[in-house]
Length: 236
Ligand SMILES: Cc1cc2nc3c(=O)[nH]c(=O)nc-3n(C[C@H](O)[C@H](O)[C@H](O)COP(=O)(O)OP(=O)(O)OC[C@H]3O[C@@H](n4cnc5c(N)ncnc54)[C@H](O)[C@@H]3O)c2cc1C
Image (tube, rainbow, N blue to C red):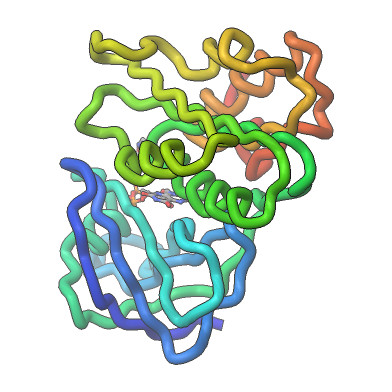
């Protein structure tokens, strides 16, 4: 059931991404990795479909009335522009949280592989894993350049605090001191063995390529987790 909630804080995370803190009357119930939906009526009478509904992933862990969302603006977008035009104290309509990408095993080593805003479920699951997981965790993140890396402070700080966490960034469009190229191409170089659970999120092409790479390396399908809709988006 859709419900109203109030934006209580807005923070510019990167040139194109804002974080929103949104508060409701009741505690949000969800598994880390799941998404809500932002819903509103489109102003443009020319558009056939008046109701806009877009998924956005909670980046916090559950337990209270607050939800954090990190939303990238596309200038020709609909919901992302709508959200970037909101202000503190505005009311937004959200849908119940759901989705398939959640932490499966807390006693297996875990690898999170994401690009762009695909990092949002990974951040929530990483926080959960660091609270309850018992193994090592490797976090791989790909972006174009340094200024667009989301959650860099959070990830660097968590890695400094947790010996069991290793964070690897790879940039596809900037020469720097770190790794370059597609992040999924660095998996086997940086992992000490592949007997792990893999969680993958990003644009469909990246998700499919990562799954293929893991398959080539001999990782079982049933240890690779993604939202699941991406394969249908990519043509052979
Ligand atoms: C399960 C799920 C969780 C998601 N979680 C998040 C999240 O946490 N944060 C977030 O910012 N987004 C997230 N998204 C994407 C989000 O739902 C919207 O698709 C995105 O904000 C664009 O919506 P829009 O209405 O602004 O653009 P639309 O009006 O739908 O599209 C307008 C333009 O944007 C382009 N575009 C849309 N999406 C992408 C994309 N991913 N990459 C490149 N170009 C694109 C289109 O090609 C088009 O040119 C998630 C999507 C899914 C399926």
